[in-house]
Amino acid sequence: MKSRRPKTRTLADFIQRGASADILSGVHDDPDAIESIDLEGSITSEAPPPNSTTKTRSKRKSKSNPAKPEESFFSAEQKLADRAAQIAHSKQLDNESQAIRLQAQAAELLDGILNLDEFEQAVCQWTARKPFCWEGAWLGALAPLSAATWRKTQRPILIVLSQHQDVETVARDLDFFLEHNCEVFPPVADEIAEDALQQMETIQRLQVLSRLQRYRESRHRELPPVVVTTIQAIMHHVPSPEQLDHDRRNVSVGQRVDLAKLKGWLSENGYRTTTSVQLPGEFTARGGILDVYPPDCAEPRRIEWFDDEIESIRSFDPITQRSMNRLERVDLIAADEAMKDEASLL
Image 1 (cartoon, one colour):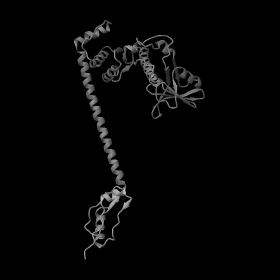
Image 2 (cartoon, rainbow, N blue to C red):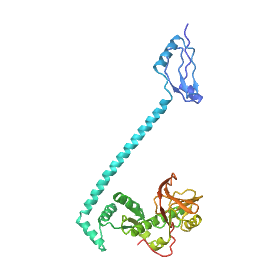
Image 3 (spheres, rainbow, N blue to C red):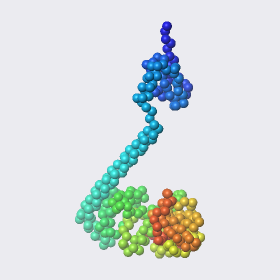
Image 4 (cartoon, one colour):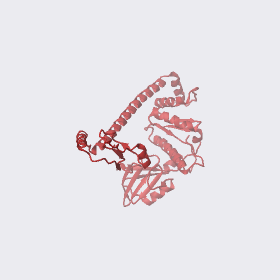
């Protein structure tokens, strides 16, 4: 008597059912067994009752391949995460070492420029306020020549370009040579530009003016700034130094200040009220706490009142909104360019 061939299932059968199959085992040695197929854990194939031989094989298989605990999956994920962290740390170290090598090469380049006789003659003419001209220099040579001049003279430098699209390129190169001591004075945005863009450029111009004023008030004790701008931008009217001094409000710990009047002063001087302070020129108040972002500060300030007296002043992170460092005072400058008298960057 011939033995009946077992029913077989093909991949086409499962595709017609609309399920994806994952074949776990091949054809068994036992003709009475059916291939074990897992349909994403939802459908399992049935087999006839195992005989003694099948039971013995199952026991041996379970002993040789014990089921792994669920923690093995998480341990594998942890290993992958640790490996990714090691790779990221290694890349960071490589970038830092590369930056150090580039900084050393940049210093060697500036030293070479400073040793040129032609450069020494040009700097002497410039410090004597005599006109001179470097002919045949490419745009890429402007940053190292200006950086070398700054190192030689330790004086503020104003770089005026004809094309606005070249400003960011030169400023980025100068940041590399001068370690982020470069300022960009942008031109006035078009009237069709969005209000947010106009406000950002206004804040940026006020930051440059405030930096120049601090350098003047420090009697040259601070690092002299390097400003990159265009012909159009330097012709724009800006507040004079006297007006910048007038449109300034100093607030210190222990001082009695009317919060309502201070909020009114901020609104009159170009600050925008918002629910969460994230950009320069914004402020918000809740209860006895005032968050304000002066245009010339690297981080916003959080001022807390006890009754009508200022109890504390802290800087805080605009992203996490967590307080950082305690301060004794904060200088609030105007956040707009409303001019009572005409002046320019020159």
